[in-house]
Length: 210
Image 1 (spheres, rainbow, N blue to C red):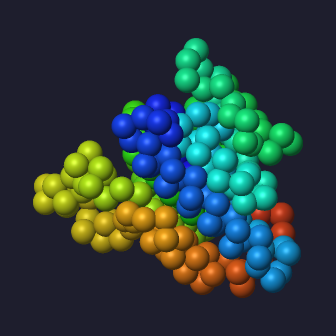
Image 2: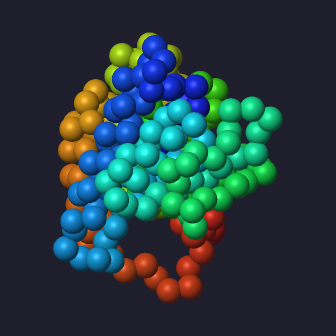
């Protein structure tokens, strides 16, 4: 889950906090009831307040574990209390934190956010576009009105700076149920009966293409 640290439950964008909380709860409940105990999808956030807190909170309220990949900052970024204690980590460098986001992720749900969220989203989109992430990943942009106003993807196609097919790298969702449906269909298709990983291989994001 990506999203702004500044979105609070009582703030003007509080509906997004509640939506992130609900999506995380629904995903965790679904994952906890999968028949095969080796197939579990664990919520992971940036570990801070706002949307990150909402995601960890939803997983916590569903009785599941969740990961927090925190970053040491002079403001905003104290670890939230809903991270599973043994799964809370703090990074000094943004690039290492983003590496672990990308390496671990099977799906991204991106809520409204500022520079940090845009940076994370565009990094993952670039890796997916250029096929530097070899594993399958689905990207869900939550809040279509927000994202279509903030990033004019159609204009990027119009001016030829991305291909029209690049619009297939992400999907929009406007309700927790719609987000869950996208995630369930994708994760069921690609990860509940996965191909075995070759032993001893480097992480997909770091693997040489020579």
